[in-house]
Length: 464
Ligand SMILES: [Zn+2]
Ligand SMILES: [Zn+2]
Image (cartoon, rainbow, N blue to C red; front, side, top):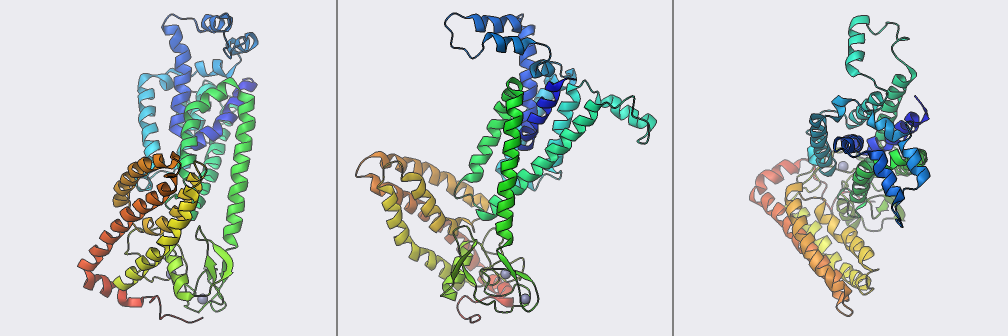
């Protein structure tokens, strides 16, 4: 096996770590398409020659590239040697269905709980399968060999360097996929409802990688390996930095040694009052500003879905949340829910003013303006809404916002465009929030009895 095989298999690692099934499907389709031309009676070689020779054409194929493409040692030639079982219509159908499942899986956190298998392991298996098939490996043979000779047998005559390499590529894919998942986890913690849209953007990039990556890998394997290596390195460094920053956000309780967040008013384990907690930042992180108003601070913690008592984050939805660390409810009584809503309402005028200032700048102001009102106001509501009601509200808001966005281009009118979008968001999500509140009122006795155990009352509890 020549160098192309190793380049190709290295370059596919990030593709498979991003989208396992989709990448394999597109690889197979690419290979099939090349073969498919032959089925149609078109000789791909002469087709390429024709394309290259077309008079005055600005096509990307020049003679040397064409020469290289049709030479037998290229990755493209390797791909056309994929075994029949992988390129059969059944396989393509199965891979297509798997790609759709994979897409839904990545889009919806709820779906993720339905899958019992490890995502990274599966991606590793996909990558290893592709490599194994590329060297002409027959999985049936391998299984038979294990059955007859056992694991301890002599593999010298059976397992070549290429087979071992396939296994290594599978493991590397599994490893890179692990880094990727850790990265997503950190992003989710910083911005649970994806207000700034980074995860949405990454998901789009990953899908594009799965679709167009294989073509890039096959046409420019060396460049693909370099880009892939750099991408993994950058991803790893960002993740490392974020983790380091996250670790600095905690300090040990002087009484029991429990690691509490720097924003925590109390220790989550022994209830000791923490000395000088700091204010909470835009993404729920600890800032360096000491707090001046404990009541206000507790409301701001809730705005970031942190427990108002021990500042631990919660991943639950709805208003009926108990802190996973100290066990205290996020909202002990209906009055506390109302206090929280009043706190957000007070922020509305300032948010509208700042948003109007952004809105006055044509086009350039759109993204910072939207980010501002989302982070300053809307996320505080959305964080507590169950995903289902959130889903419909989101679509309604999207369509309305799109309409309003057209106003932004009109000079003069532009200034009201973003504030109106903010109001629309606020209206829809706060009425959604109110419906949740009504639900609690209708079974208030139960709600409050359940919550009475150890309610961290927002204004009376602990002193500084
Ligand atoms: Zn403690
Ligand atoms: Zn807590």
